[in-house]
Length: 498
Image (cartoon, rainbow, N blue to C red; front, top):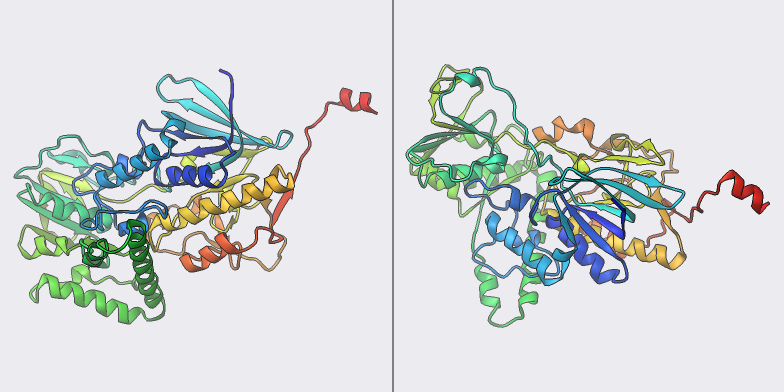
């Protein structure tokens, strides 16, 4: 099959990919682009996950795009289908949906210095055929986990269990859990979402956790924005809400870093007020400080409400083995279950698992430092969209895409065909890419790139700092190397020219 060429190839048609395409279309309208999506739908995470209650764990002012207002102020924490509709609507409104090739899984990409272009190998999932795409620049918008399978540890005695075992990433369509006893293994965002959502039909839902997580209740409705709509344009209301919630996010995170005991006391006090004085607080009292792992948010305290009503319960213990009728714990207690849900996390995977190379030599991303949270050390014309772990993903995705557009315009202006960050500072030392102790981060430490101990190699996870660096700071920082590699000539041609 003949190769296809575009100026910019975007991999992934989820929240990040559609956003990157919008910024590219707005800021670099002369650039041709295409999106390759391995699945058959727009939406990424918000189309893949279909378990009961699936929702954002960030408010929609900051999870929404900077350029498209979120207008449903009764759903500041939005359900998955509504977020998916929002992403799809963005694609349709801007003609981005017409630029997507679905069922295209990228397997490898090689940078050809002689032509100053990427040669990307793509598998057509439907036909099994291999396609080749060439481009001057590649933007990876594939998220940070493996879409094919989640993290799923093997438990002793699984085969003896007579009921159904489900991982939330592969939720069975039309699963009937009416009148069933359900055990959800996990304590993260997925678990605290599933537990209250399934109490509508289940006989009882138990959240089984090895250790507690910080859980905060936040309002579902935004009465302030609803009132402002009567006086201000929609975009103005959206930006005010976005600024307000961004300030709150940064304030809570910074206070957690500087005064962890204060934040811990506030969070635990909030839980105590909602679950009642007779509830055993050990189930919501983590052994770590706030924001050493991601904070879980529950709208209007829905998790605490079902616990207080007795529709659900929390057990903190370790699994000894599965049994025919449920789970036996290390303490000797046995939890009866008809359905066991393994909300045990994600399998981290960057760039969709594709193999990268430069002039045929494999590029080892885990050994490279990341530049400004976007590019890789000594990797030409390649950007990766990676959002925040301590705030909404889209905040960083938006300004990262803007930065890439600025970079492309700078290359056009100077005639450079190749750009890559290169470290010339011997005082830069390498550190882990993400400074969080969450299990899924620790399991993937060997798969992640590195960051440096100072800018521009340091990843701050701070929107204010990133905004200044990515939107306003000059492109030429002495780290980015611009060049214009010339096509290689054969020995015969070189001799003739001489």
